[in-house]
Image 1 (tube, rainbow, N blue to C red):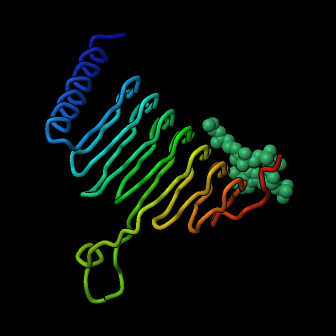
Image 2 (image 1 turned 180 degrees about the vertical axis):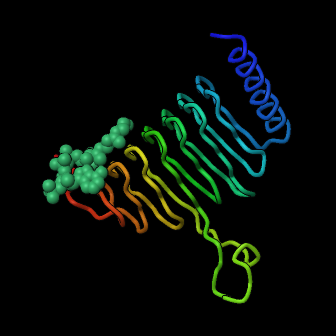
Length: 181
Ligand SMILES: CC(C)(COP(=O)(O)OP(=O)(O)OC[C@H]1O[C@@H](n2cnc3c(N)ncnc32)[C@H](O)[C@@H]1OP(=O)(O)O)[C@@H](O)C(=O)NCCC(=O)NCCS
């Protein structure tokens, strides 16, 4: 490792620690034991809880935006994934591959005479139940529930609820088969 990388690593470590300590002092962050968080950013604009045994990769962003993000036990979130925008509840033993984006909000755009940026935001929340696997690059939009045991194929965009034990792929994600015993 060269000198620059070591300095960069130390800065990130201090930054992460500062954020984590401040959030815990403000009761905005609950991290249970045996959680591994690598160079990831957790914003202080809401409440975040991460249950035991979770693994969160590098360069992820967890941004509750004045809401609540709850991550269940033994869930893993891989590098460059983003959880943002509103209430997000993720169950236990969920696998989120790299570069997934879970956005629990939408901009209001009804008035064509006003900048979209100025029209406000709506948020219904997203629920990802236990044992779900999101393939790489999956996007989950606001209001969606992904049922227990379901698989979402790489690169899919989930715009509507997915029933439990489904395999869904594509844009918009459609169920192509079911996981059966
Ligand atoms: C969803 C997935 C698990 C399905 O695997 P599978 O059960 O073996 O399914 P198949 O390969 O038989 O594909 C079934 C059909 O869905 C299509 N399909 C599969 N994955 C797709 C995807 N991600 N997007 C669009 N279509 C897809 C296939 O082309 C095939 O279509 P066809 O019937 O017209 O030929 C797999 O394709 C996938 O996307 N895995 C994610 C890999 C990943 O991101 N790994 C990261 C490590 S955690």
